[in-house]
Length: 456
View 1 (cartoon, rainbow, N blue to C red):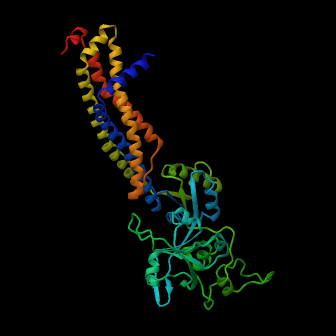
View 2: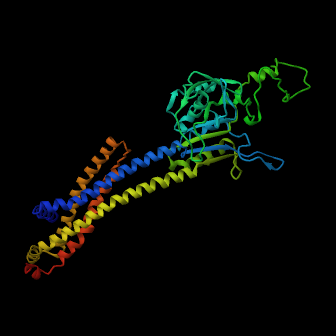
View 3: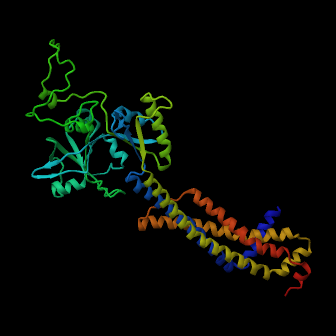
């Protein structure tokens, strides 16, 4: 009942000067509204930046084969053949992995009509690669399917740079280009990505099923490195160097000729790939994803504790750090700008409450003369300051949410308002009332009753 009477008295005191109370709440109204709006815009901008950097590959991890060695000489990373498409399927079971795809690389000339071009990247992969790179929105056409991968279909998707160089910007859908004398039908054009952080053109790329690139373009058999094999045409002579039993005279099954073997390579179950690229669910999941991938592949490759892995997991630390610093700096900057408004509003409350104490000195003296304790006077003025802040804060939250919505609708800026920001704004408005209202309340509670009653 004491708290109820104190709150009721505070409302009556504020109602005596409604204009002054409204102007006092205006400072908190502007401050809280700015905080809510700025945090919404900051969170939306942070999410937009994360999406942009994620499309550049900030959440991506590259799993590379280990290093091969011969005669004490190490050939460096990716020289061994230790990764398979089954490994790519296995790492997808890791909870921190969103998507993953095997990759087979090639370096060759692309021909169309009387024009030629050597793309920066010719990659054989699966449709999941587009999800890993956030490249699912096609500019034209469609992506190849898992069925195309199983059938080694001669279809491909190309980037905007290849379209410009070979097709003069015209639509390439349905047209055929040649890679290493293999005809590929263009079924899709990738959306433009531009250059990456290293300045390399991401649109200068050709994507095809990895089985097609490995067995038709590079001419590699299962377990053979794609960089050490060359394709052969039907009119070329193929050197036969893999006869296991050259002196065997008994032939149980018909043996295909060298030309037949080169023209119709047979798929094998355990084929190696040059790389596996995966995408973590978020930048925070990168390190857990690395740990889970390492554990999964060590078990699959039967690597005992203490032995060196036959693979390497690489993350794009530079891009992740840039993402963290950029978003963190933006949030702090916007929050600091909005906090200035709160401080200004708090100073206004302190000023008005000091004026109120001076105007109500005789009232304070009368209350103390009839038995009110200093703590009661302190509580009354604190409650008045908190009421001003909470009412102004409630209106400021509504204005901040409305302002964020207006910015999103009419200016097209990304906005992401969270309930946490609203609760924090309400809590801050109450804290501001306590902090800036304490000194005037303490001043009122320290008045001498006799001197207060004599105050004119």
